[in-house]
Length: 333
Length: 208
Image (cartoon, chains in turn orange, red):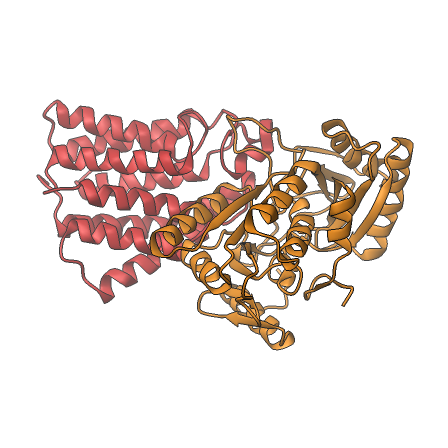
């Protein structure tokens, strides 16, 4: 393992120290491992809290700031944070208008946020509404399984719900925007390499030259199937087609198209993929209203990408264009 | 061993922590194949913290001891294993009573029921429940049949191992392994494997 770290056991704490030093607009509670907006709680505004295992940077801590999250809890690498952290985050962002928990659909995240919501309800009068993201079409959705994973849509949701909260809208409306975004968005990912969890010290799985994994998540776990490496043109088809098969995206106000890097893929390749994604969408009659290309939800050093398509409407586009000022996403300010 | 008191509970937790430490890399390796490569690391981190907590604040009785372990698992580990093992110890602590065999069996069962309620896994989903549930049933049956606690715990450990092995061939329906679909078949479930260590630690304590 070759990594720019000190001790594998200290990676998360050390990174939070760096984040704290680099971003005066944030405040970091190092004991609870929570990144807050420096001006939290914002009086009268719905607070938005998310969180999850570390290793997905800039998500979630990098999305804390004006127009997006009010706080983000960091767990160990690929491990959900604990309820105590979420309680501290929730109490720290409660400006009197309630708090929205944005949770990616993984058993650990769901259980820990559920326990946190129970603790908050027992300890204080803060109203908490939880929205779980589950947009990964690589995983079959069924009541008998853990359900689809929460992946790329989470980034778009945090931006859009964040903008709605910044407008001063009540908790129920902010949660409605969040649910709508999750319902209207789908994703699919692929990997060229595995990733190395610092504490494990070696790649999670072997992926030989000339092969790729289709249908991966964001935790270095293998995907649904392994296939021979193909040109970006074909990879784009393999990612977009299952999304289109799951969700009708034709007509309307077009989509927000998001090509996300998994951490080990350079931007030049993400743009190559994006061009091919656009070509596939054009052929399918799907218009693109807004685009996002870059590494926003990573899986440590995994090479690969995911494609997320979100059916937009007038309101969502307005919220998308609203100002955002976070370490990871920044425009209009 | 005729009952579970503070001493026995402490020895059990200690033994489980040792087994987890010793099997840490193996558990993580199992998790690498069908999960996210952290089960051994996380469980070891939690049990190490739990032992440290017990040393810093020695609990008054067995129930308090299990509760202390539970709170550490819930507040320090995260992921899925933290809250699930935490819930197991927490529910067990509230049902332990005087630690007589029937109470131990009922407490173990309460712990397993807590895991099922919290994690929403059912038998056959290929999770820790597939080791824990048969163990709870074996323990209850053996104690009910009048077997001494030692022998009952050995039966429970054997049932846990059989439960783990019985789902190795199947496709995972819960947890991270479920995302692999058919590809999860043929792999030992890491959660079931660590749950076997938990029951085996109790059986070893009983002299098995």
